[in-house]
Every structure is written in structure tokens, then in C-alpha cells.
Image 1 (tube, one colour):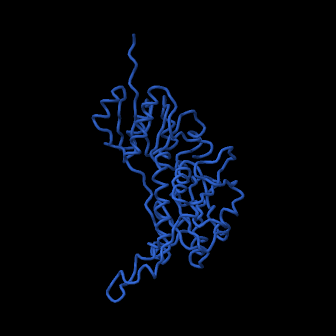
Image 2 (cartoon, one colour):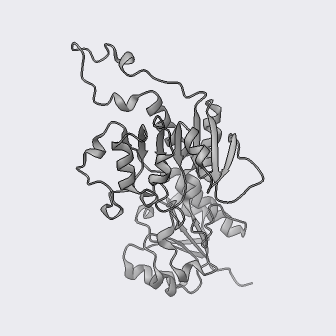
Length: 327
């Protein structure tokens, strides 16, 4: 009986180099882990790789693959990887989007509590009579979130993780979805069609953006959306995708007090998107908060290894990307 050759796993993502311990490699004894730090190494080893855990990824690398069956990226956003040759192929593509569910939901809740308890206004307080605590609660009275309304634009994986947790804290939850659905996600009181969200915008105390970066969502946070929000409401991003925002419109909304504040997760500064300059007073405002946008490395590696077990068994994997839809 001929011996089944090992699965060749090519690893080219820098943050995954050296991650897999000897214990992991021992469990996956039928997997050949090959780490590639240079492009020429990637182009050579992708030729006979069965699986690719990618960093650099383009048409030249993909066209060199001869037996590739599965590609994985630990990121949540995948738009930059979906060039036509790959998007139209039968190669399975998974990403780390499901690992962001709890992290994204908890990040949104942190921002909701930050704003409701007025913590964002206490960052630069001046002492009164030499005492930081004298009269602080009277100057910045906190509010309870119980009974307030949360609007979630995008009730996908992160949005659903958030809706359940927010409901448990006593928030009324409104949601939107790209496709019509027969069921209502756990914790959501009312669903709206993505093209008819006026009621959601005008009644929510907090608006959370939890959509992927696609052609349909780029620039959706614009003057039209912002002008329909309550002046006392807060905008919270957990998408971590800057192209979703029209930054000139957002800056105007903040400076002219259309909304009470914003919590953002930009993955770097991109002036081509109209972002205010780094030195702009916009970023120094108390009601403009920049949060981290990260998932834990343990969650990311656990997901990939779970999928590697599924791949070996030929069972369906988690985090599969719809390459046509772009997420």
C-alpha cells in the first residue's frame, strides 16, 4: 500500500513565523510546515503547497501554485486578497473573521460604557482646589445604559455577538442586515432593511458600525447617515475599516455637533481617504476616541489549527470567505 504524502503547509505571514511549537508539529505529524520569509521562497514553495497561510498574496504567487486547495489569512478584512484569478478559482479561502466576534463586541461595549459614564470627558480634567475628585461626578454625571437604544449597522458575526451581550445589559437593540432573513438574531428587538434605516438612525443612542469593507459599504458613513442621527448619540466603529467612512463628513459632524462623539478603529492613518492630518485638532477632541482593533493571538491560532484538523478529515471549515461577495 502506497503511503499518503504529507500535507504541505506554506507559511508566509510574518506574524505566524515561529508560532507553531514542537508540540503542535508533533500533533500534526502528517503536515509539513514550511516557513517562507522571502518572496523567492514563497514563489518556490507555493508550487507544491496544499495549504497556504498567507502574508503576501498576489496573482504571481497564486499562478505558481499547482496543487493548492486551501488559503487562510488571520485578518478579518480580505478585500486586498481577492484579485480576479483567485476570486474566480475553486480554492477554499478562510479568514479570521470569526475570531473578531467577541473582541469586537466587547470593544463596542467598552465604548458605550466610556461614553455613557462620561469617561471620555475626564481624560484631561484640571484639579479643583488641588483635588481631582472634588465635584467630578457633578461636572460629568454618568448615565445608565439600561433602557437606551443601540443600533447595529451590520448584524453579521460581530453584530450578533454584540446584540446578545447588549440586550443582556438592558439595551434595546435595532439591527440591519444585507440580506432579508426569516429569523431575528438573539438580542435584537427589531430588524431593518439596509436601505431603510432612518428609524434606526433617528432613535438610537449608540450607532455601531460592524460591516465589512466592500464596494457597497465604502463611504456609507457620510453626511446622509450622520445628519439623521440624534445630536446626543454616539457613533462607534468595530469594523476597523477606514474606507467605510467619509472622513470630511465625519469631521464636519463632530465639529458642528451633529452627533455627541465617535469611537474609531482606523488601522493606520490614510490621508488618501480624507482623514484629518495626524496633527489635526480633530484627533485631540475629548469626544473623538481611537480604540485598538485587534484579536488575541491565541484565538487566531486556535481557529487555524481547528480548521487544519477539519481539512485533514475533509469536513467543513470555519470562517469561509464568500469570494464573490468579498467577505
